[in-house]
Image (cartoon, rainbow, N blue to C red; front, side, top):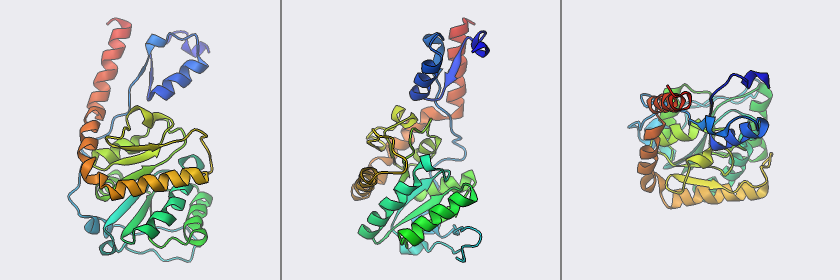
Length: 268
């Protein structure tokens, strides 16, 4: 495309993103395409001091118009463990996988709940609510709707593990924000998270088929990974690694890296 005729450098947000760009624009100089992973705000995302019970009790559930279900304050004192999902209600985010796995791990761990933060189109919100409560009969899963960043940081801080199994996630900022709060993560082995999620900070389940909706195998793999995270107490064993990893993802580090690389390419 002519739009790139006078472009001397291209910034991408992951190795997967870079490969995709070069696939579509094979004549562009590969050396002038570089990866700068997104930066997060460390003044917002850090480990909050709340206990799980205190933190959960600060949140109220949200439902969809016409559901006939009353919103409620989450009964934090009932739980000792928590699995967190944050994301848009879109099929490629694969919330269906989380809900189907929750039916199994919530049965195995009576003191474990699942918190779903995010929203989407009205039809999608209704679809996932009905999947959770009418189809799967979940009793310890709580939808809290869209949340501002400080509240998301609070949820990340009190969770035992963050679960974000998107198909081909372009980058995965939610992984970084969750880890900045000291919480390990589970995702899918596709897209951007492959650049920074290792077994030191969590796990990526196999995702060879990139299936949407989720297959039984994906649900089984996610269930197994969540059980491993809870049984081995990843929050304690991997949490410090999570916080250390995110130090290089601050917005200051990101901006400094972009300036240095562009200066190198342009020979400034």
